[in-house]
Length: 218
Ligand code: DX5
Ligand code: ZN
Image (cartoon, rainbow, N blue to C red; front, side, top):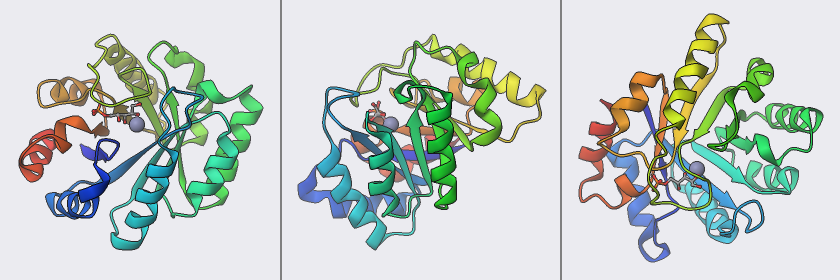
């Protein structure tokens, strides 16, 4: 399983050292949580833009951008500038399927992988018809909007259902889970079928990034 470290909780004063330590500790991705203060209450746009700028210049570790915004297309365009490996947009931010498909098309035409994220209350069946067009489904295991929350255990069944649907229909889609993931619950996510997990607090607040990432990967 791959690890995408959320840098939402990284303090600006020592961010370069933390990014370097995360890279040497073996994180597979840097997870960039972009919040506009409208789709979710917090606003992290300036900080995540600054961090993406740094990371794009100092490391080859891929950026896994998670857009929790209302004005999706303008944020896709501004974060495309940092050559992200992946841009994930929220199913709930689209007015209709057509708008969602336009965003998916635009992201792929600009050489980034595309992910669709669903909130805990959104049914997994809602996105079955677009799985064939995307690379990753980001299952929110907390309400989007901040780090350090507790994993909502009901969301694990969604991962199992999604995995079953992907296997049954022979689809090539990765499953990524995001929110409240730690050493105690990561095995549940792995068993449920996750290919990637996002972890913020569990890694950033640990005293040994390498050890923590190694244990999360098991
Ligand atoms: C929440 C973000 C998550 C969060 C993960 O809206 O999308 O990526 O920062 O952080 P932890 O692992 O602390 O829940
Ligand atoms: Zn996230």
